[in-house]
Image (cartoon, rainbow, N blue to C red; front, side, top):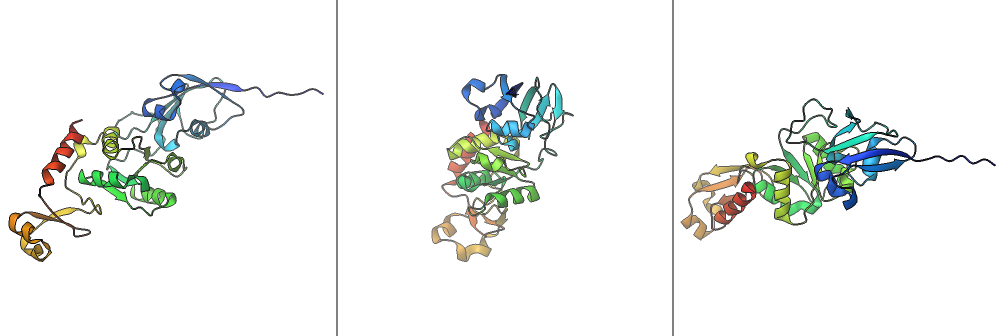
Length: 253
């Protein structure tokens, strides 16, 4: 009995910049052969390599821009680029509508401390520790927010349009990484938002909050601010200089 064999096809793949973080060392920052059967979509190929599609913003096949529905062919030379939130890549066909010019975030359950630090820097940062993945994605799409997560699987959801997998495990390094990734230094507005609830902070007359102040605070401080959301009171106490120094270090790196 004659047997029919289906031979593997071969394409050449190259991933750029931080997309290499998802790849094994031998495939990073270089072109490599990818063997396959049939005609898989480029989206399936990318995610088979362990890269969430939400991290990808442009795909060139033989020098031509394609979208995620393109089916890989033998001999294809494929270049895959990361999300260009802060870089104009001209008229090439990007895989999401456009960069989010107003930078707003929503963070998953693993990034609560990071949310507070981003708020301290003035960024609109939504965080609730009881949101599931579906709720995070729905809110992100409705409010045009970038999803920040430590969970790669979340970013593989087909409904995700703007998302980023935070590499570092340390809070302050995570903040540095996010600032660097989205080129946010020029957008920093320290003490503009409440670290607790993300509300806007407004200056308030001391006389209107006297009954809420501790005796020593009332005696030694005159300038106060109140969150428009949770009504938390802020003032430039002993911790203020330490926070200013932390912000300076984050912004100047």
